[in-house]
Length: 89
Image: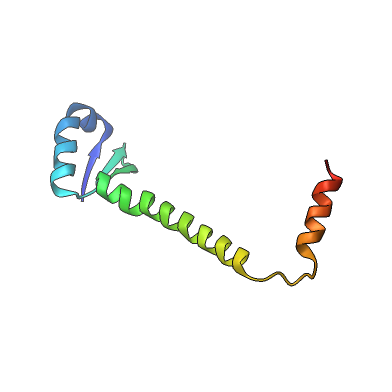
């Protein structure tokens, strides 16, 4: 994994991006002697963040659907809800 300074990044951004696209290897960005960030390919970003967020959203929706598909344990639940809605109008 390559580490470059912010100055090097400014001077050779095009080359860094080209290498990142070609190899997919993350590039670490340093400020002074400390690594402060990482540049990753778009495919890595999508796999690690976008796909994970979509998967989490799907999981939550499926959990809600599962909860809604189960019969209510309260008797007269629907009738009570309709009465409450009418009372709030």
